[in-house]
Length: 220
Image (cartoon, rainbow, N blue to C red; front, top):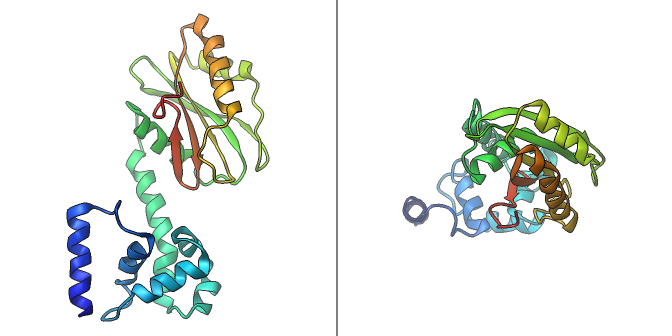
């Protein structure tokens, strides 16, 4: 019975991808690899309830996972999943030379600052063909703010002979929603850089290994 259910879940994944699975279903399938011949659905529900969310399970420390009754192999697997994911993301854009769209730009930004615990503000300098000229962190602050004067951003663009730039900063608190200040800063910088023929093509916000693109949300 369990093996038949597992095969149906795998077939569903092959057909639909992962997007329409519930969090407990994804965790249930991960547990297949260390818990053979057993229904892992109840354990997946228990873990998500105990740790609050799917990502809460994957980010839980080893000791807490052991206390939940998991074996060494299962604890190791759950701890490895985020590391594997980060490694994949890094390899996906490692050596990237061009950022043709907001997806490639967002992935690049996550790889650069996704693990920072303090807020940082950076600029990706591009040429007219969106080839990467430089990535530069211009400010690093506390967990709540990183103050970067607009003039410093303009100087970075001009110093690198950029015709386009992408603004990048993170929200360590976890929110991917652009703030009113984010939108106002972007607008102000666009006006400042226009006389120098430097365009802002995107403003990427990074949080918890994910990103939001202001161009992707039509906020530029």
